[in-house]
Image 1 (cartoon, rainbow, N blue to C red):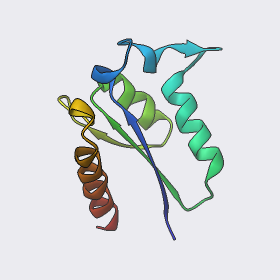
Image 2: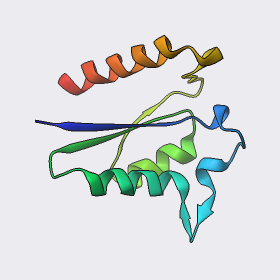
Image 3: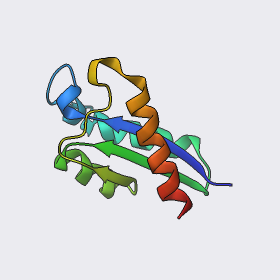
Length: 97
């Protein structure tokens, strides 16, 4: 069984533009999220990072996460949860193939 963890990391929707890249004790916050997800799963896991940022995508790839990068990605337009569900379903289909 493959375990997947989805980390939505959308810079355009962050309260402060560089929050995801901000460092805490020398480690970017997005990297901390990836490392925490990796520590929770076993050998058969998949960490998926959804992002609109090339910098976030680079950090994710360097930490062995799968990246879905789209420059105009918006997950919660006006807090529309159905859009998020559609993106998760699309990722699930990609993982099956």
